[in-house]
Amino acid sequence: MKTRNLFAVALGALALAGATLVANNTAIAGDHGHAHAAVGQAAPTFTLTDTDGNTHNLADYKGKVVVLEWFNPQCPFVVRHYKDQTMINTYNEFKDQGVVWIAINSGAAGKQGAGLELNKQMKSEWNIPYAVALDESGKVGHMYAAKTTPHMYIINKDGVLAYAGAIDNDPSGKDTGATNYVAQALKQVLAGETVTETNTKPYGCSVKYAD
Amino acid sequence: MLPRMKKLLRIAAGLASLAPATLSSAQPASGDDPVTARLIGETTALVPGQVFHLGVSFEIDEGWHMYWKNPGESGAAPRIKLDLPGWLTAGETQWPTPDRLVLPGDILDYVHHDTLTLIVPLTVAQDAPIGEAAEIRAELWWLMCDDEMCIPGGAETSLQTTVSAESSPSPFASRFDSARRTHPVTPPTDALHASLSGETLTLVVPGATSLTFLPGPRPSPAPSNMVYAGAADADRLVISFDDGLGDAAAISGTLVVRDASNKPRFWRVEVPTH
Image (cartoon, rainbow over all chains, first blue to last red; front, side):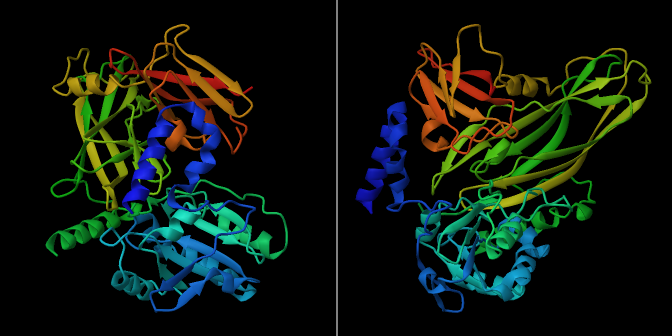
């Protein structure tokens, strides 16, 4: 742990020292020991346990389309989307077409929205029909470079990342004609079409990582 | 246990303000909230034919932050909705330069600590009624975060003033001066060498010991890898735009320049993309 932190500090210091390291930024991406997920490449596999005690291994879902939603039940942006039913409606629209949806909370113990009890409670309160998985170490969040709650990813039937970004184009929640990027990309992925918008800028609270 | 309860109550209070319809209270945020907001004027009155500077002033508790107009990879910029008499016209909001904040997970945000004063220039029409009382009303929404959490805040607040043939500095004038100290200005001739080659922007300031680039919000294109490329103890920055430049006419932002004197300067960067 200590060595890794020192390594990260050393990398950071090197990066600050000048522009020469820019060309080597792939090395920096390995800062947490993993290459980051990228659209068009194989989605990193993981195993996580949800609030009901079930384990989810991404490899088990090969042949299905998987949506990952970075989640924090106390982040105001997430609260708004659950009040508006954005995620649940999107899931309901596609669930019969073999779409698996997993909400992932990468908040570290003690941070806003973290912890088994709270997430269990909110899953029940909000009637969330899909799994809420806990990633308190932040390992999976780091693999996907998840920055915000919500931050959305779509993995196609071949296990390739097809979309990364925002749920929609309406950060302020005031646009009734917002484009739901996830619904748009899911339609295209399921129809075997090219995804028109594969990367959008996610918005929300920062993921409350431990490190 | 108790601080946790307090926080949850705060969240509950904050959530209520998320829905615009429930923003009926005219009370400014106060008391236990990490951020309090109020409207202030730079001068004591509105003078017909002149520009009145309205300040939307936030006091931010230690450990908390609010967001710049480009919040970065998370967070959200505060929003101001003004309700003005017909003879007042609002110009573009002027923002001070934010701080970079790198969070665990290499999440880069652009934030404000301690105080934030947004300046809105209000042009007073020639025929504004001298001697009359005037009320400037604002509906405010913001997101505030500390290391652990983010909560929304909101307030409906107003400033009572009058239309007069003359005005003098208000007791709040110094806050405007402080805010303007970090407003970006046009760099001196030849002080900044900015060049765009393909999707790579190079900014060079001869003699600088440290540079920090704070990219403007859209439509300015989003640079890549800014955790490492956005700041350096060097006289140059090399910033790539891996997602392309889109159809934006220019890359815009603020460059913070330090040299041997260590006194920061704040420059406006505007690099045409074509």
